Length: 237
Ligand SMILES: C[S@@+](CC[C@H](N)C(=O)[O-])C[C@H]1O[C@@H](n2cnc3c(N)ncnc32)[C@H](O)[C@@H]1O
Image (cartoon, rainbow, N blue to C red; front, side):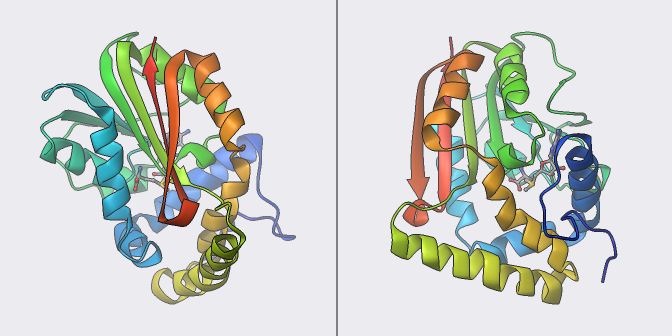
């Protein structure tokens, strides 16, 4: 079992520079078993959520799409399967080393991407919004690198609204997932952080306003699996 911890001794979520360092170190060490754990903790549902996210881009075949915070490049593979050209960016060397894709991968920070203004047709981001230290800055970067008319699609965890779903979600993600994380990945701390980190995300209205403020029009939010996953989409104006 690892001795590195992302949560504070009192279970507190890190902020600022401490969050940046802790999240990067956590994904470096989770990388080898990361995809298998995704299938297990989503009960195989994440494949479907990812397909919806790729389809929501609605761009012409051959468009260049950035898989932002690509991790092991799961979404790069989906993008290429749909006929897009993919490029991945992530700040975790461990995740990039475990990536399985023919797409070019860049090590970098979402808060300052090494791409020229307006050079990309679409940005797809899977389960990373809550890991960013400053979400408005990252949304601003997405708007900067996208051409006018370019599309943003961001998939992430959410807190379901119906009470019965909220309870079920808490039992699974806060109760069972940390135990599964300890058993399969030897890392209960990381698999406690992942569900708890949903608390970093503001509510739907604030998220949609942040997209608008960053320069996205027609922003929309859909949910899946009883509201436990959300897909935010918008078009660069
Ligand atoms: C939950 S994983 C998601 C990986 C992948 N997108 C997927 O759908 O499986 C979150 C990813 O965000 C990356 N990440 C977090 N903050 C980042 C940042 N500021 N810049 C680049 N990557 C970041 C992590 O390294 C990690 O690979």
